[in-house]
Length: 203
Image 1 (cartoon, rainbow, N blue to C red):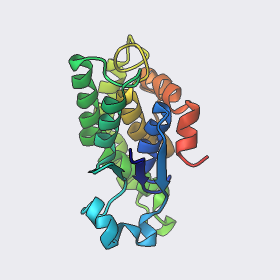
Image 2: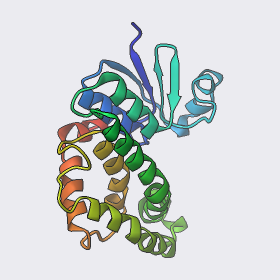
Image 3: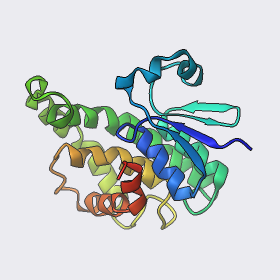
């Protein structure tokens, strides 16, 4: 059987896939490269992911891109506590993964870019402030979902928590004020405090 291959640098969305692979105890090969190297535009990589984005995986003959979809696939394939245990949990895992991609990720990235990622002279604090205000509604939704539970489903850490916390964690890096959502912050600290999250980020 061919080994799972994960393409992409630790400091990209690839870290989400590495985190899940580590939590699942998978044997995988990591091809560590960044956009800045031009590696995503080579003919070889574009066969794997014609979008030229990171991450991508090869699992035997199957090539997949989109980090959250990759994680749902890997969890479903390999099972264990992180995997949905039935169709109800699969529905919830997909719901939260799609939700965080559509309701949180792009806006959180706006804040992150203008607080940290862009060169100082190119940052626009007004964009970050607008993003922070726009995130109030979805973060309130997540906070409410966590009002009487430690994790998003099944009373345990699952792929749903991993996918959502990997995105929502950008708000902490961007120094957003999360004090209005105590359930969210407690849950986020619980998820991102897992030792394998730190390892997946490259240390």
